[in-house]
Image (cartoon, rainbow, N blue to C red; front, side, top):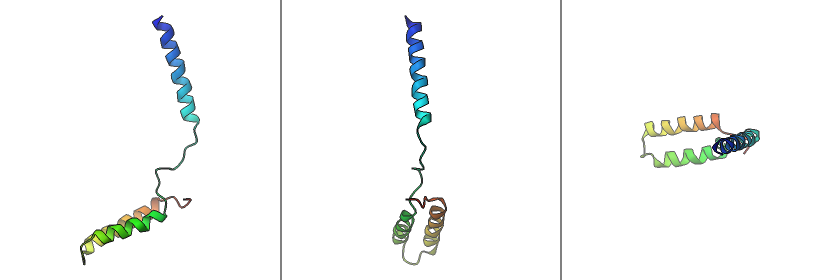
Amino acid sequence: MPKTKLVKLGFLFLVLAGLIASQPRTASALLCCSTCDTRYDSCVNACAPGDSKCQLACTDRLNTCERSCSPSC
């Protein structure tokens, strides 16, 4: 009896793995490019007035966001 349960579980595992693998992959991890400016504005507003290091860090984050965002959003 345990052997048949293992076979059924193995078969179920293979079916589920096949279904998961057949699903189309989307780039949901990428941000939409329209969010980069909003995030930049929030970052700069959080900086102390005249804090050039903080503003430079915000600019670096903006550049990174723009390089990695999905323009298709």
